[in-house]
Length: 476
Image 1 (spheres, helix red, strand yellow):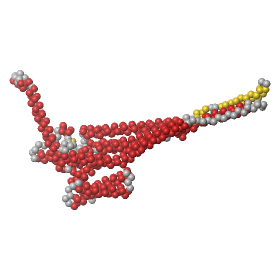
Image 2 (tube, one colour):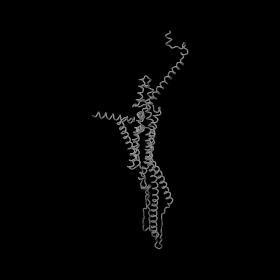
Image 3 (tube, one colour):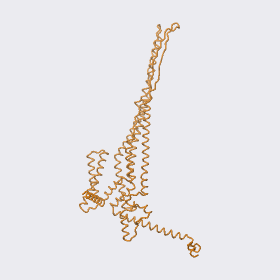
Image 4 (cartoon, helix red, strand yellow):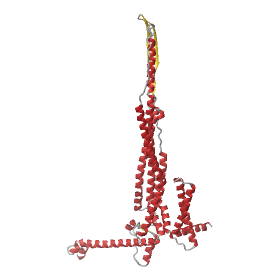
């Protein structure tokens, strides 16, 4: 029972592929099967569109569902009626692993690095400048503290002098008035202008980056889809019209055509010579060829260059974070500078030059000065994890794409052969005639080179003087 079910599913799968690629609707069963496959394909693509509208463009659930349903209905009708649309949709899935998708992924990774790490670098730099302005503003208020200490010291000295100048007969009453004032209007204006300019610059740069980020997040998938569809349509057009386009694969159809030519007694080309095997690849072929290795290297060169640029941007961001973080820690660990200011007065009372008493007066006016206010210390951010995780996913996809990039071209040609059998027959005949022409050309060149080498031999012109050694020994 299980074997029969497996056999039935296998036959149904083969039939569905045949109906989907050929589009032949001879009976009701094939028509319904084609409609079912087209409906499933359009449902998957409509689901992707629904998620894009709902999550990326932030459309309402009803709007996203309505647009997706209309798109799915129109796509089902188009897939059911047109073989080209079905081929276009199939190649769209395959083209995810092709060169254009690689470029799109590299662009997405570059946008991610530019929009996240460079923005974070800008914010860390802005925080550092803000902390400097904050510290200057705080120091402006802190400058008055030492002056207040000196004022208190002068007042204390004045009180001490008042006691000394009290002679009983004549009382001198010194009045010491000291009021500290700091002229800082120009300094305040300069700081205000610097802060306003910084805020305006940061606001302008952030607005530009937010606009670019919003446009790239919302429009990039749609533009990528349109560009990819354009390249796929161009590939289908060139496959059907240009017989030279990627016509280097020896497929099963080619083998069948060669066997037919051999059965009719006409020239055949199989098996291929070693030189021809390097030029023409069997389809499908699991063995990697030199051409496929070069294709993988060519695929990986832009990936390596973009990866180096990503590493540079992330490293600059991380180094700036470390610089600001280390400076912040070192400044927070600094102890305030203690400035000792102790004033002492020693008074000696004398009577007719004879000391009769001694008084010591001492007051501490010491104060501390901080180099950097802790409330103004910058707080940097590091987006290393937020950048590495998406980039690692992109690099993993690119690695898988590089492994199958060479084989993807074979799969694309096989799909086009399934959908366009007439064009495939014409391409087989063209490749068959091309191989025969090359072989005939090589035979002619070999024959001409044989005649040329014979003309250059001396025994051709003087056979009596330059006879072969074997012939001379036989005559002797």
